[in-house]
Image (cartoon, rainbow, N blue to C red; front, side, top):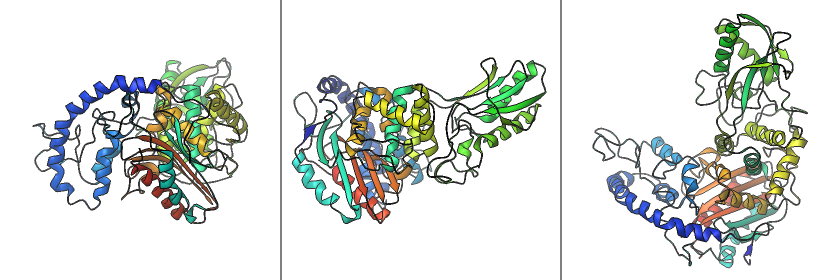
Length: 532
């Protein structure tokens, strides 16, 4: 295939200048980190020899070194990295395998990284932006893999019968935005859960990475009614340990204190879900993959202690959350009536609020865990930000409009929901890679959580159990699975240190596991490519 520039925006020559400007600083970082990492590598050598899957560690050690190797330095502060550039996912994986440490972890009192009686430290990745190596072109930016070489590599892998009757692929250079390979890349196909990449870009563009979702209580001056007002935060938690999330218990405590200042010990309680409009039920109906889409729920209306994945949900999430809130009020000396639905008026006085983590963190959680409830919430908040009804149709129109305003190739796209559970969603492979390229643009640091939130192969989220003997830590991608549909879209670091964006889409698949394996082989092929 002949490489071509992305049609939605020309290549960005300013990246060359940015890379050139940042390279001296990166070289200093690499030199500074080198001796420290060398010491840890020597210390861990004998231990690592006993690890049953050395390829995982081989890729892990290089993952963050070339990891999100974007031309500008904004990435280091945008996602889950420590000060040396080690992905926290890699640290957590080391802990799971009983290999503590890394450059900044579990350091002994003597600074050696070990302490008496503790395991030797796991290998530490180098700084994210340092030590890029590989073939370079004038200006310090690596030459992109050749289109013919990529076609020779990918076409036999994508010709696997496990990929069903229809397939599409797109590969772009995330530094320049240049399209390197395409196979039916402009054909809209059902994206399944890779739809969440579009949802993330639309929400971050509409709201910004620092936006928080706020749940509040309000007192009606005329009637004395206490209203629990849903702010569209599905991560609002009723659990004792909030773990950094907005806490329904904290809201009750703060509300009770405000009521006591008014000398109130008994209230009529109601709840307001009117931030959202339309039908709460997703077109797929009752399903363990998501709750009813409502502006008020606690713990995604899960009936168990799970925080991700399928789970039975409460039949009426808002009523259940309001009842839990009434119970928490009682613990603080406030008696509330059985709650019912209502709407807070403009005259109501806000008594207390609790807010979610910033949108950047919510986007990362949505992508890493493939969180359908968060996806539908962020789609509706995009509609609210655009002044549209916060229902399925309004969210669909708002998201597509946001992407269109970014100049992305949305012709033929249909975003019927935010999660990708709707089989009538349509997205092209070219659009998926365009979204990734937009998130990698140094001019759009607010979109960086789209990249940092992608599941890490062999480490996190929906890729935890995949690539265990392949490109672990090097491939970072959003998965998508529906009956007969398999998709994979994300980033990969090539053998020569190039950061590529890719999207693979397959329809008419009959064996989901075989289709996933075929896509994983294609992504691993990209990782091994020294196609310059």
